[in-house]
Image (cartoon, rainbow, N blue to C red):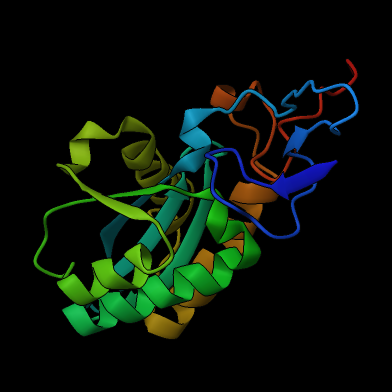
Length: 201
């Protein structure tokens, strides 16, 4: 038989043997397809900046991306100057973070802020990720993750500088993704395999 690996949104994806389109041999003339029913939210990323203030009232801007289907959060950068060039580099950082999984995403939802330049969009569209522009409040899961970070982490700790913010947020992201249950995921964590049904405790 001839098999072409694809991901949940139909894009060719190397190294993903679990989702395939198979054609039967010519002997019986029949064909069939075997693939999981896709969850459309798994193909969506959402990007945003939020800000926090240090103990000396210096404002820092944090760029994060949410994998909408799994609620996985990527903290990609902390800066005092969120320029268009900086945002473009953070888009490259996102693709590096995602690695081979990048081909599993079809859309990135972002705001209409001027920091998102054509160069930012080009980094993602070159990887076949379509840009969707929208107001931030139209994505409750994205805003919810932002407020969770503020309530659980940065509002509870004095932040001294950029380096301190990066370290604290990196530790929190690891906890958020691998140790914090989410009601939207039936009290599982983003790092859990959502295709595996856990045994009752």
